[in-house]
Structure formats: structure tokens, C-alpha cells
Image (cartoon, rainbow, N blue to C red; front, side, top):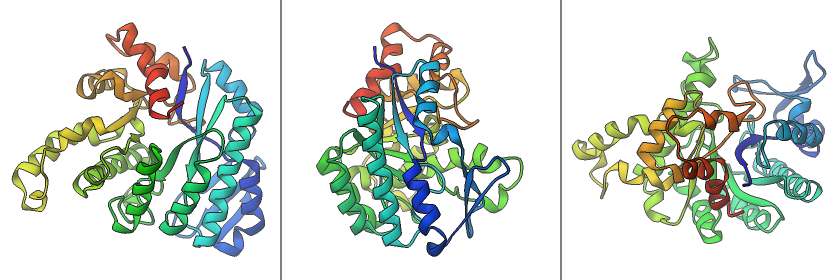
Length: 329
């Protein structure tokens, strides 16, 4: 059985080099931390990102994969992504990332797969890059944050991107960046502990209530962090559809969309994943490591073994078969 990690992060050296060369001219502040890692800071963004060796060097990443019993990893960007940049530079950054993923796929004989970064601040450029990058070897998913510079995912200018994803049969993997409510979450690492899961609940609501999933019925979407708040709020969403005039346009309850999403295992509580299996089905859950952050799992396979009551069939689905189907591997 091929074990597939659907949620892991990478900062390619060519992408970092492009930031070092042109980032400051486009609004970023580049630097180095006390460990010598390149850093990037952005005006209005609380998180200062550092590009540490174990998230840059593919040889190190492969060694860590082997130790984690993972056969294939889908690579993605994380903070700061590219939406902060002027559109032309956002496109340039996206192209650099996507080309690096294709090169990694070829160099490591399929151990790494790439997710397509898009300059969503300019949807017309995003559509063109999606068309280009979808033809690169090893690319298996479009990759998007849960908002684009504060605009929710049902924002109409983004609809051509959703349309192109459906046309290409390209699944979409979502991830938080710059979560909402940051002014109240600056302490105690709440930006991550609270903010990232809250973002998933908002993103799912946006796609459901904003009509994206109805308009594009073949679109498949992966929610990280076990769906965040979304599965736990589904009763409230259904009640809202039944009682609120703001949701009078809904033709079916929000719970009818639960299985339009895939969910990764990053919850840190096996009983939560047991509930998620019961709620959405074992065939909608994939493993994720969130490599290489302390919010994730160094041993994502071992976590699956702790989920109560899994059958052998369910275990195989979660460890690899679902991701192979979602990512069309």
C-alpha cells in the first residue's frame, strides 16, 4: 500500500532566491534569523516566516519521509504564499514554485507531488497559470488560501478559477493564511491554535452558502486540520438554513455538502477523527503531517493507528487510497 501525505509544506530554493532578488522591490522585507535562515516580513502580517533547512532541502525532507513511513508527499506553500505581492510578481513567484515542484517530482521519481500555487489577487493571471502548471509533470492539485487578501472564496472574481479547476478535473487543496481576528489572537499562539481552524469553518461556509459548490458540482476540495470548525458547526449551519432569511436561497441543508469535502487527519485527538469518520465516512479522510511545523505530526501514520475502532479497510482508505483518488495519482 502506498502511504500518501496530502498536507506538507516546502519552500524551494529557487523560490527563496527570487524573493531575495526581487522581494524588497515588491513590498517584502527580507532578512536572516539567528540560525542563519532567510526570513520574510510583510506589512500588516503578524507572522514573520523563516525558511528553515528541513523545509527547503529535499534530501532532508525525503529522509524525514522515510522515517515517518510516508511514500508520497504532496508539497505546498504556506505563509506567506503569494497574494501579498503585486500581480506580476505574484505570478512570477507562483511560476517559480510550480516549476520547482515539477523538478522535484522528476528528480525523486514520484516521491514528491506538487500543488499548484496561483496568483489569486489577479484571477485572470491565475487561470492562465493554472492552465500552464496543470500540464507540468507531478502536479496533482490546485492550492488556495481560505481567503484572498480578506475576500472570501465565493467572491465573484474568483469564479473563473473555480470553473477552470472543474474543467481540468483539478482538485483544490485549501490552507489558512493570515487568519481572521488577528488583533485578538496575538498572544499564546492563538493565531495558529484558534485562527487556522476557524478559517476552515468560514471557508466551507463561503463555498456552500456562496453557491460555489452548486455552480461547480464536480469540484472536489480538501479542508485541512480535520475540517477545522466546520464539522462541529454543521448543526448550526443547518439551523441557519432552516430559519434565517439570509439563507433563503439555499435549496438543501448545509449538511448535504459534508461529503463534497475531503478532510485531513490533523486534529491531535484520535476521538475527533473517529467522530469525523462517523459523520462523513472513512472514504473522505486523508492523512496529513503539516510538515514541518509543531502544529502537525512527525509520525502521521502512527496517529492513524490510534483512531478508535477503525477497520482494516478504513485504515487503508485513510492511509493512502483516498488521497490517491482525490489527487488522481
